[in-house]
Image (cartoon, rainbow, N blue to C red; front, side, top):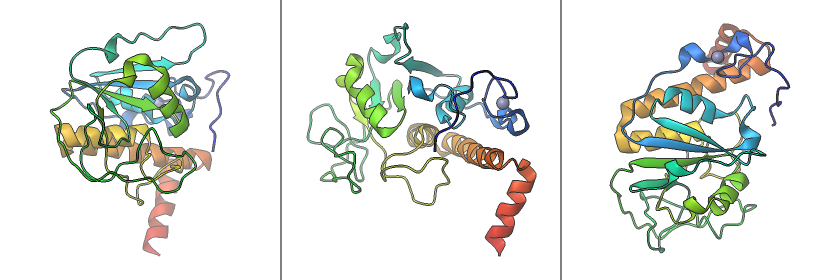
Length: 236
Ligand SMILES: [Zn+2]
């Protein structure tokens, strides 16, 4: 599924990029975090209505959204440097500087992108101190992997990874692997892990709202009608 890249913004909310009848802006919470969250977004994501990084950055005052690969623009990488900067990325143990949060992890560098099953780590769990800055890559799995290699500042960052997403999470795009998830969803889990479930839940709720608004919009159904249908379906 590919969303359209709008040529102009007619009929779209300038902030959330949803069509105006499905604008999500009044659903966006303000989630104050101690961690600075830096989202590096692949340029192909910029105008997609299904891009969840846009919403994450709107909900998180202590965040920076950087766009990678925009022609004629040099990305300011200063936020990726300094002490306490971690990269959120599927990873494995066994390499110095890499920290696992426990659970199962694919071997990020060696994994075959077409593989259905990720190779698993031995299961060593090291809980790192809380990052001052958490860098999150936004794009397809291939784009994210490419960015992690292309952007020099990211190559040597210690990494933090999350447990695989549960299958019952509502999503807009089908994840290619069990360990990949939407950017907003990944940020929600990282924020929950480091700063408490309350904050994570607010971001999870935003992600769910986004999925519902997006699905209703694709079917041109008013949101209330769409939610009624979902409810009827669930109770039948
Ligand atoms: Zn909006």
